[in-house]
Image 1: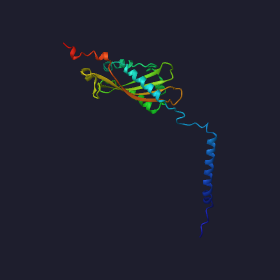
Image 2: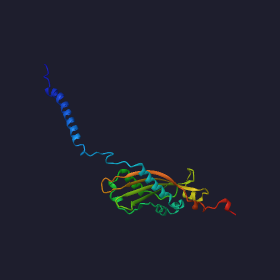
Image 3: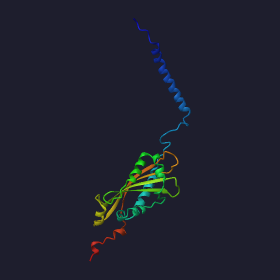
Image 4: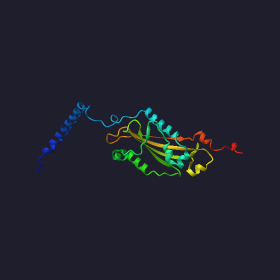
Length: 220
């Protein structure tokens, strides 16, 4: 017995591709007509930073670190050492409640950074970690966070000292610092968008402080 042809299946093979084609054409025409009204997610909404701006930010941090306290202060009085790191247009802002109020609106990497800062241990053996919460002098809208990783090293070498070893060492000691700088210039919009910059520098002890240690020729 012959099976009657399935007319619905035959029609679907014709009309289904035709319908998809019509939808594609309509979609293309709609996009061309309303191109300016359709929001674009990408470089248009997230402008890239100019290399000169990044160099200026990096120079600002390096100068602040170079002008900070002697490495002995980092070992003996870490809070005083961190307070000695001064910026031209930024001030310490540890009491700003927005760090906790807006935290859930931060990107995951900034949320992780805040968690690391809260759990940072003030240790004087090996690597030291610290965080700087900063705000702009000109506006209260911006948020700035600098994570610091500090190591005491024999000057010009990679050997790492503990604070106890550095205080007993007879050779010059320098402080190596690595940082991650995150900042947001606008906190009114949610989610809050941050820029990020990483880098590092060596904090050389001032010559006057080096001269405090007597030389062999100066001994009786």
